Image 1 (cartoon, rainbow, N blue to C red):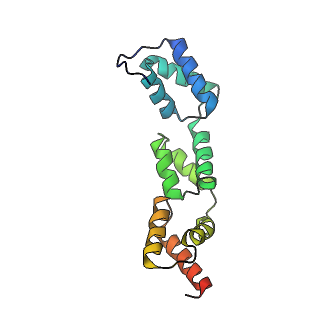
Image 2: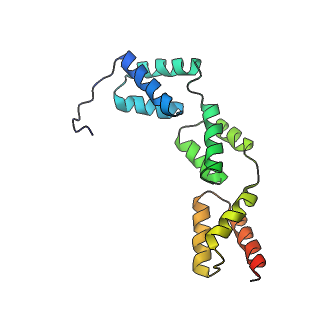
Image 3: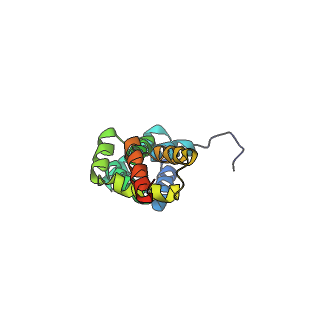
Length: 160
C-alpha cells in the first residue's frame, strides 16, 4: 500500500503496459479501464489513445462485455434483471448495450427463482422468515410479484 500522496505520471508505454496487464486478467469496460489508468497516473490524451488501440484490437468491447457480464451475473450469482441492469450501469456500460444484453437472457426468471426461494425458506413460512426471503430476493433484483408467486406456489405444495 502506498502512503505517498504524490502521483507519479506514467509514460505512454507504461500506461499501455498497465492497460494490457489489467486486460490480461479479466475483461473491463471502457470506463473501468479509463478509471484505473487515471488512478495509476496516466494522462488523459494517452488514455484515449490506449482505449482506441484496445478497441481496434478487440481487447475492449463494451457490447460483448455487457453480454458476458449479464450472463455471468444471472448464471453464477443468480441475480435478477433489475440487479444485472444496475451492475452493468455501475460499470459504465451504455444503456443501449445493457438492454441488448438483457434481451439475450431468457425470460424464465420465475422458473429460476422457485428453487432458490424454496431453499431460502426451507419450509418455514413464519411472517418474519417470509419477509426476510422477500427482502433478500428484492435485493438480488427480482420482481416482487414473481417472489410472491413463488412463495404462494411453495405454500400450496406444503399444504399451507
